[in-house]
Length: 95
Image (cartoon, rainbow, N blue to C red):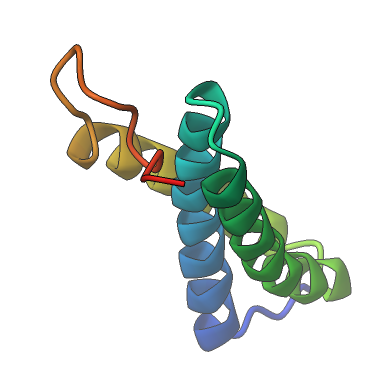
């Protein structure tokens, strides 16, 4: 039977949620063609994703928590970081 540590499962879920939220910000900066914000979001994206990858490669059962976190992160970031049409995309701060 697979053993799941609730703390690790929660951390994987939060890390992947944050990773997807950061990915949305990265994509927005790329669409706006902002080099410095895109590069910055990209580095944060890889730092966050490395935790989840290291955690769930040790135990395949954490993949489900990673997928749930990914869904939550994308949903929340698109829902709450949406700007009215005509403004710059989210994450596309000044260069």
